[in-house]
Image 1 (tube, rainbow, N blue to C red):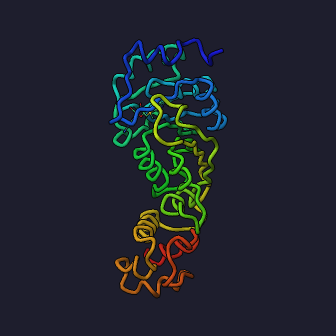
Image 2 (spheres, protein in one colour):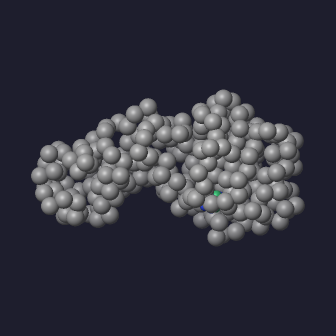
Length: 277
Ligand code: SAM
């Protein structure tokens, strides 16, 4: 049985001629049981507004609504998807608002009421850019309670990586500084149409009430970006451009100047960012 009374997604895609466009990273989820399962990973939606980025033909949107989201605001770049999304809005009166545009350029906040959860299956480059933005506002806690995001498996592993591992870097540090990220689902390429070349994973991030260690987001971002840009170099060389007395600052932060970025934990990176504030 389907999760709602709307036509199957294959039929929707055919009726509205939504052939997938590579330039928009379109790999659609067609199995509504799967999209409902992803929606359940976002937590209890009944009291929440959900911001969905990149709804496409609406598979995940239908999952979110069927799972009880109070309201969904869906931002989609491809205007061809609008008729399919309008059909969903008609089936769930007053609960789905669609905005056509680039999620990187739209400020959705005036259309949403707290508490807010975010859910998305996006092209990975857009997803990564939005994730970093959502993690690095000046003020904390942020507008969102949780983020439930699909990524390429390799990107998901970078978000949850621990120090010392190959995947550890900027994404792990920013995600684990102010949130608790977990991989909650793995999906094979065949779950999508067309099938991408690589596997995917859903990452669920819960916002922490306060950052694990104090630091200014812009400074922390700058420090970790520089440190991992040249991850094989010793930190005194990789961070040379940050401050003339970088060796002293490293030592004051509990970091040996000869250490490499991948062995350094969040606490020390935050301490180093604080010496620059
Ligand atoms: N959520 C749908 C699903 O799961 O079947 C579609 C997923 S598809 C991987 C990504 C969607 O994001 C596409 O519909 C694409 O048009 C949309 N998209 C790509 N870049 C976007 C952007 N910058 N802003 C909003 N939507 C975007």
